[in-house]
Image (cartoon, rainbow, N blue to C red):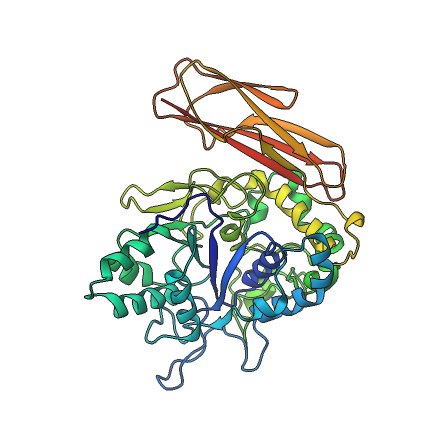
Length: 476
């Protein structure tokens, strides 16, 4: 069997429920579809949203009204309106018609629904079994049930046949499930017992979610503000127009939803509670950021140089994960306090440090969507390593890491170099020389430890954009 190439561009499958932040994440994802290989966009259920089943007398729960345009289709519609401009900035943007072919309805009737195959689960099944040179990341933005149904269909077809060992090895060697926590019971009840070697990364983060204001650095709080959101997001073209912010008058589901008061303009907590709302998220000024909880899942794959997807411990715009103490194939966000709201709000995934760069990059891409001339918009600088990005070193060794910076717009670029202490397990002293970083590995660096050196390049365009290179030095 051909082993998946760990450095090949991965394919991604997205399963998603109709939470408002899933719409926001979907809009952002499509702005990055020029550099992310999207293989499926599938509606799914979760414990927070399901469509119901009249045959089994299951009522819909926090689900859009029949006939309403659903959030994936809303995002693709907006993308189609912006496509002619986007493709001027990168010809790799997929045709809207190609994206529409990836949109399917998965298992949506009930929380944890895996009763039967659906067009969505069949598409996920085909992607997991199909030709792909690298890994396949199956993302659960809601529940994992549609992914579980795809795996169950594979098991039903091949278990007990002479091909089962081959198929099991294929799936477990290249498939990674990423999820914002477990929003149904299908991982614990089916996936882990029947697929014990499958890698699962819980990529739940705080800085991309409803509680971002509690963990974003003070200097980056502006990127949550009504003024910044209005000037850089909601007023910028068809994609920005669909983006959800506080007080926008919109709602998620059909009928009264006790947890959805985001569309109301500057309500008072006591008035909301009197109307029957459960005020679980602090109220923000009208026009403010609400959430993009699932953007951490695909941020792993953005081609910014941090190589976030290559290993869970690397970290980057999509957060950083640690291995679970009880399951060698499970990783969870650093500082993970679980999905519950009890206890202090922490920066799960250590992503607050990247918030400003990711928001500015988003704003720049939104400007692409309304700018027909390449020269009239900003584009990110690139940092390329002149030599291997992974190196074996010795304790006390001095290493020179050469790199090249290119800005496509000819902007001035500010270079910053530093040791990523979060991802590193050994110390080092670094100095920036011309087009190189001089690294002195600590004399007491233990065998097996690693030092991550980041080269960060930020241009002078508007909005400023940032590219990176990550060098990983392993001590032997």
